[in-house]
Amino acid sequence: MQTIAVIDYGMGNLRSVTKALEHVIGKHQKVILTSSQKEVAAADKVVFPGQGAARDCMRAIDESDLRETIMTAARNKPFLGICMGMQVLVHSSEENAGTECLGLYPGEVKYFGSQLKDVNGERLKVPHMGWNQVTQTRDHPLWAKIENNSRFYFVHSYYLETESPDLEVGHCVYGKPFTCALAKENVFAMQCHPEKSADAGLQLLTNFVQWDGTI
Image (cartoon, rainbow, N blue to C red):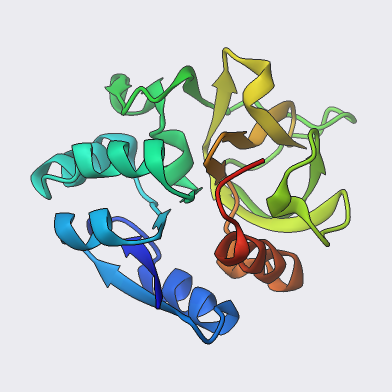
């Protein structure tokens, strides 16, 4: 029996993520929601969700004593980061007057700003909330059977600016283009919420539970 661990550190849309994964797993797989270091370490695949403020997220990770557990999982097994679970993989965030993140990848999370405008000069609301197209910028197993420019669901006021363009596998435009999905080796992470993204999101989760972590 293959185990997929959803990391519970108190900062994610945990029920929706867990239920969506349970909907797509195979008969020889199970999903566990856990804050146990041992259970995460023993799992075959790991999902790292998150929402809320960067500083609160990092504080919750450290108070749960899960920092090294998360880092080890991201280095060694199929790993899916969702929303804040993508943002905190990079070095830092502008949020909360500056927050040091996990530093797995080079990059910074930045605020969209209060004067964000579309191509017609119309002011855009922040947070970026709702459906938007995701352009696949590089082939990846998790994009299998998902049409390019499919719509996914977003809720965020901060966006990732990566210092390594080769990390990007998907981008989105909201006032400006931004990296909304990154991948390297056994890690895939995205800003949007696949668990809230209807058929495209369920297909991505299906691809993840079938993925062996290689590209």
